[in-house]
Image (cartoon, rainbow, N blue to C red; front, side, top):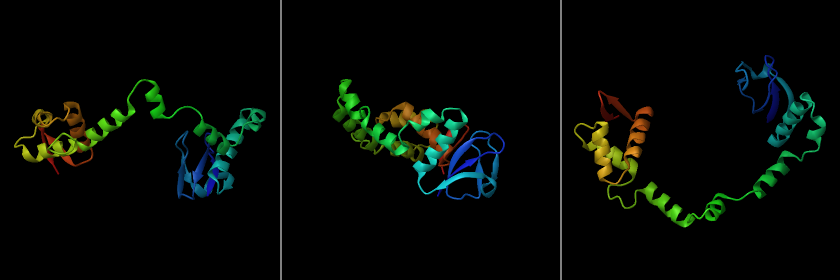
Length: 175
């Protein structure tokens, strides 16, 4: 179920899916129980809910006549699928060999040509194998195995952010 609901504080309109316990206004951030929100339209079709919201906004801004001349959301989605060029065609026309790009991406992701494993595995191995895995030591370890230094720094930051590693006094440790 989809419902077009409104905010009593700022008059914003948005589409809510299902029946959540609470809903938050995307414009002003006011949180209320869903049951207390004004429901203007309720439908099982998400496109119908989007169209109802758009019609209400157009009417509010004095553009109801112009909105009435537009096609439905479903029809406009079909136009989008047919319009423009896809990524491969765009890159091909720009002179980029898309097959070579795909092959290089596959090698980079899998770590092909790297006997130590994927890039991520090399960084994890450095953290496990080094006696004192400082950023410099991990970068040196990984670059010797073909992993770019920038990737290593990003991986260390992500591992720390995600709680898979800690950094204390410049030394990293896997958790």
